[in-house]
Length: 301
Image 1 (cartoon, rainbow, N blue to C red):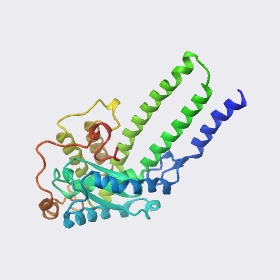
Image 2 (tube, helix red, strand yellow):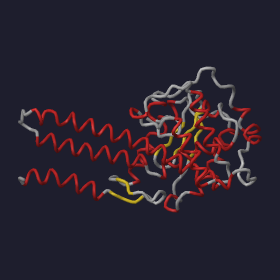
Image 3 (cartoon, rainbow, N blue to C red):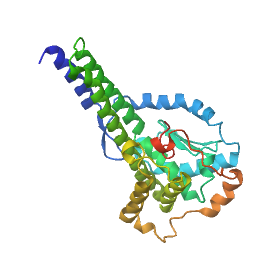
Image 4 (cartoon, rainbow, N blue to C red):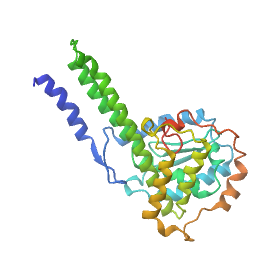
């Protein structure tokens, strides 16, 4: 192997190995090439534009404060390494059904999604899921995989310079296909991991984990069964997520069943949220790519 080729192979490999870190919340090894502060800064920069895109924040201070209170019941239960995150829970004044998180602790939920809920535990499930995307460092991970893949593509491009062989001409297409498939699977794994983390946080805060199952059922029903083949989606099939959530309750949270320490808190939701939400649209309005790419209960795409 020539020195030039050795460098092109080893540099991306060493970069990827050096960026492998253990996530303190999940215990899972993950690729994180950029400093967390840099990724968080990206989230802060994107925040104002996203708020504007969704019509600003909800007008009701009571609603905003209520959702913020729910979020702050969850955040004390994150890993110690995330204790310094400056969490901000934002209610978007939009009837589009969506929720997402930005790195750095900005968590968004739309009025359109809240309109379809019936209790506080459902809100906690969504906020917990989005907190899980932040503590799971999923955006950091996705950016790092994209950077690593780009580095490999650049290396292939350099190696391919001046060659007209069929193999060389096909290499970018082949690598591109593998990269896309890998990122799709990675996205599905993120969603399932965020479901698990969200349930952990809501149970620790005293919520009935059935709220998570109910949220997934609400999303499935609002979509009217519109779900793409799972293999082509970054979002797991709703039925799979529901089944996984039920299994997780059976396996880890069976003690919450018929236990007064774990509540759905419907009356509090009716008192503090319902008067400020209005009626849901007769036609569910999902954010673009919501069902394809993980929309609600996922990072914004």
